[in-house]
Length: 412
Ligand code: HAM
Image (tube, rainbow, N blue to C red; front, side):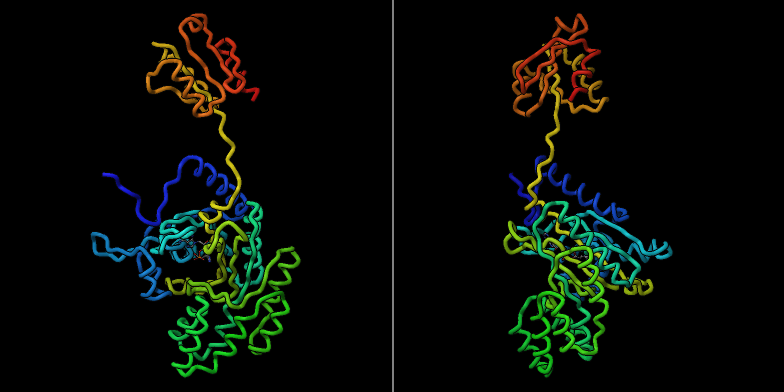
């Protein structure tokens, strides 16, 4: 019986994995250059970690299950809530700000399509403990630098959910989240109907005007006219910082983000080409979650990059490892293994034959796997302490002392 992999999951073959590792390394190195340090959290958590803020509705979108002890658990759909839980449990007395990064798989019960999977990877950071615009500035600049170091062509949109919060401050929480969800889905018609059905029609025009504001810092002036009692200085400082650091961006007050925990600046980056509809490669913003998990009120900010979408559009290739195949004539297999071990100890990638095939077949396999050299351990030469070294790319071969073998590779 042939067993298929579950819907929305993928297998990664070696070429793909090597490419993913190169991308991962660039992400890690960039985050580490800003002082972020890696953390990890469990693959599954208590379900209420994810429902506490977003409500029971979210259960439809996550892998939730009962374990054998009857506990309600969920595979993590993202890492911000788990990191905040960990922070409250383990790190709340550590000196702030804390800079964490993670590279982990996440699970969402989505309708799979290109760039949207049920198991996917996020590379993200959380900067915990600062409510200054400098914290948002740092994470936005870091996200941009990771994408730039990967030669990605992207646009960056920045918004602030505080504006809509202020505008809707007299609306109760349930209605507020309903409205935000409609804005998130850009369902303007539905929003108009909903507002009038709730006798909130007075909010329709200002919301529509606000979320229609997109562009440079000039849109802040238009926003001031819509919400005159909002303090725009945080956003203005952030914009100044981005200009100083030469980061290109657009303001867009329609960004509310699907997750309900954001309280301030929010941002999203989109790949300019190569991904079709699922082209959002990064999302983040500032939020407050710790008080929900039994901690104090700790302002935090961060982002997550959609690793799989980025891997799909990254052109880079991993450097092919130059490997050596150690082949042997009949009866010399253990001598060949011994030589292979010695070469590996000095850092070489060595393939040994495990099929007990003829020398001819071993050498033809060396060509198939693209080995650069073959070391042939043949009885005649071995008696004199020598082996045959064949350069498979040049097609030339020489006889060398076993003791000198490494010298030939060290020239590489
Ligand atoms: P998010 O926007 O839900 O944010 O996810 C971040 C990124 O993960 C998205 O921009 C997208 O590239 C990728 N992504 C999301 N769902 C899928 C999927 N089904 N298949 C492939 N890629 C996907 C968060 O998760 C927040 N925790 C980010 C954050 C960190 N905010 C503050 N700190």
